[in-house]
Length: 200
Figure 1 (cartoon, one colour):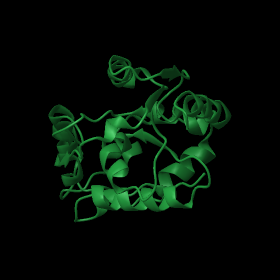
Figure 2: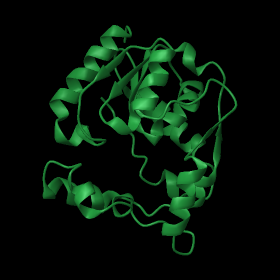
Figure 3: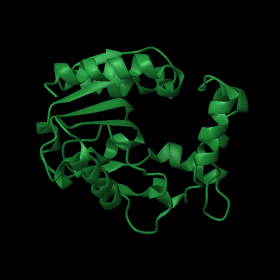
């Protein structure tokens, strides 16, 4: 397993997708055996660029409580109504940390304990609002790679429904959006099952 560091992607002036694609491609090159790419949350919108940039074949894509991009055209980083909410939170064009967008008790419920929450909070960058105002162009052909969906939370039910409509296998591990930090063993097992189903 290889996890690329993408924590600075949102704070860059340049478009985010070439950086994401290059770093994930580097990670794929370092993996021995089948290459299965798992994307969480907003990272799903980069799927087409990850596939296009690969230096070797990707056997499968897994969207874990993640956005599902269209097959062609462009993808919103965030829907307009949510961007309007974020605009109200920004100071001088910069947003507070993601965990500060929501009531404290709601955020705490996403984590197994205070220490884990503190560690995640400390790693978060403050992202410029413009990151969420951009559209990401879609590279064609990405969905020809076998895809599956791992659902945690109710908030991504529509994305899971889109996955089912596309004929993808969908597995649910009930939890909140950051369930991989709450029960990493269960999430890891679910990812492995999906990868095997997809032939990865």
